[in-house]
Image (cartoon, rainbow, N blue to C red):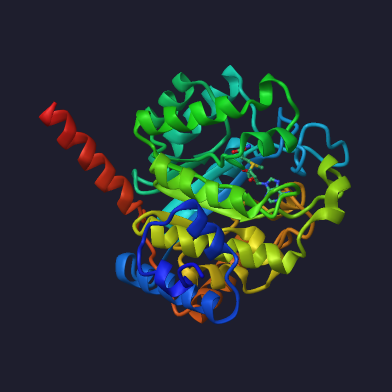
Length: 370
Ligand code: SAM
């Protein structure tokens, strides 16, 4: 007989085989895992949640990821790009409502026009908020010079999910061409980290062909990459994507949800001081999904502040929640929900990753010594 789950959980770092075992816990063992991750969150982060007002500023995408509803090949979708004024109004809403930060997200486009536009918007957002709004970008793979320009213009966090760290699986869920190159995604993550961004990554959970070993490998990747932030959520099928043909092979939604909570709990135990997002996709499966994630380890929520009329067109997966809410509805609904998770929303603070501060101090100490 191997070690019991309780024994494995006495440590706070795990081997791949430990993680495989922990990801399969049920009943009392699963409850024990969640209690342990909650305690760690309470001790290192506190019972706190920070907001990133999410602006999905364009669904125009140059990529064709086989799982994603806004992929270039999906013709059943009205494409949109918010005007600069609409983006700035959303940023102002976030600032006036004392959200510490916003996150600008879009489909993946690389061009001089996009580079300049985002750079210009960053300057304007900093200006309208007296430098007070923190800014996360999630605009996909870009050249290092572009990341540097945006960093210089005021973005200080970047979220780029690796999607899966098993290269073979990555190839099964993307077209095999230079635009969807696993190695480039990894290079981009390294570049972001070197430039000095708080760097976030993450994966989808419950993808077709994905194994428990793959998920254990994903957790090890995040630890070894020394991620400052993580956003991971359940994969949810979308009828207008090629992966729908494998829908019959998927785990039931409830199991994908449960696995996501276990991934969050384990990551919190392994990486005590990072920021972990309670992904919106959790709420597509369970109305209290994000609150459950907060209880067991997550500390970041991304209330959607995209103008309501566009939300239906940023459908990454079927049944995406809150697509007909306004930003105000979203806020009051979240306040009530987070209260249910016994957590407190911290207004007016950036809520930076503590892990990043420590990593940066380490780098400085090493430089001085070197
Ligand atoms: N293009 C940027 C990028 O790739 O980083 C940002 C936008 S992309 C739509 C944001 C995230 O949506 C992806 O990283 C992916 O993990 C998630 N996503 C896309 N399709 C999904 C699906 N069917 N189920 C769950 N998450 C999905």
